[in-house]
Image 1 (cartoon, rainbow, N blue to C red):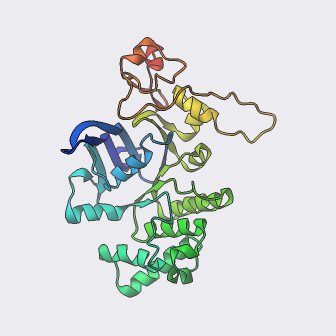
Image 2 (cartoon, rainbow, N blue to C red; image 1 turned 180 degrees about the vertical axis):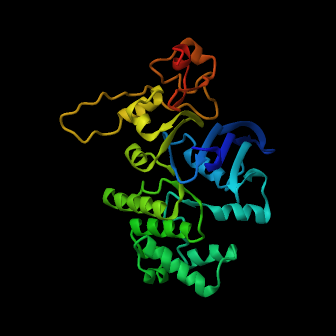
Image 3 (cartoon, one colour; image 1 turned 30 degrees about the vertical axis):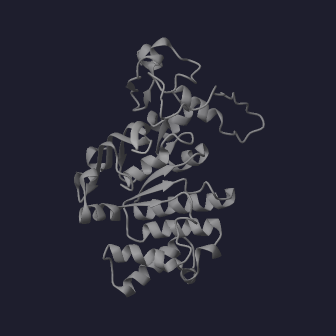
Amino acid sequence: MEKKDIIFEIQDLKKHYPIQSGLLKKKTGCIKALDGISLTIHKGETIGIVGESGCGKSTFGKNMMMLETPTSGSLSYSLDGEMIDVTKLKGKELLRFRKKVQMVFQDPYSSLNPTKKIISSFDEPMKVHGMYSQKERQERICDCMNMVNLSPDYLYRYPHEFSGGQRQRICIARALCINPELVICDEPVSALDVSIQAQVLNLMKQIQKELGLTYVFIAHDLSVVQYMSNRIMVMYLGRVVETADSRRLYDNPLHPYTQALLSAVPVPSLNKEKQRIVLDGDVPSPINKPSGCPFHTRCSQCMEICKKELPPTVTTEEGHQVVCHLYQQKGK
């Protein structure tokens, strides 16, 4: 894709949470939730973010939205054709950015106010952004409800009156009501039944095609990520270990961690056998990360250099990126 198609560019993003102790709240260390993430997102694509629990996926989404302030790094977004570092935005400029980027949160129930009817969750964001008259807002809300196959009559009910799948569709409709360009989806179907998951995923694909949306799709389920994504970024302990086209990553995973993740995906065939790669040990603490490659303590192909030095990013001719000493040593 061309440079002009870039909608979001993240460079060396870090998010460290200080650890404080004692009466004086003295800083004794920090949790490195994100430790140097770089990613380029193009208009109209879906980029999947995968990794184990605690690897920093949700923190990455919140920092992209500026719901949390990054410790360092840059987040450049294309506002009206100009790349602007959103970490430096304040007031009205930050509000203008948030109109362009919306988020669908993991838990649809906790992201809706249980004391207010659904319509207030739609009306308030449009009021904040100064969009439309009251009549136009009503029409826009009804259009968004129809878009997710829900009756506009549901707007006058409370969140507890809906099923999990309906609540998630309501959250998707709410994210769309202010006409965003990019939607960050944080585990949007993890709490839903499999049959409902399929409905919501197909709905999201259809809406993306109709509106030309860009998605950042965060999930644990690797088969769901493969279905939704054009490209996939694999994270481990706050760092990127591999980035590639969805089909290429699933057909030829390069990093030992990605290979282990994909070996856990069930194969819907009685005749096809799959070798399971079981990782030893637990994920290290982000407070005290291992030296060298963060994955070396669990890697069956660990070399001496892995314990001492961070691996470089190696890019193949097909644009497949892997952060691993194995490929540097092999000259790939």
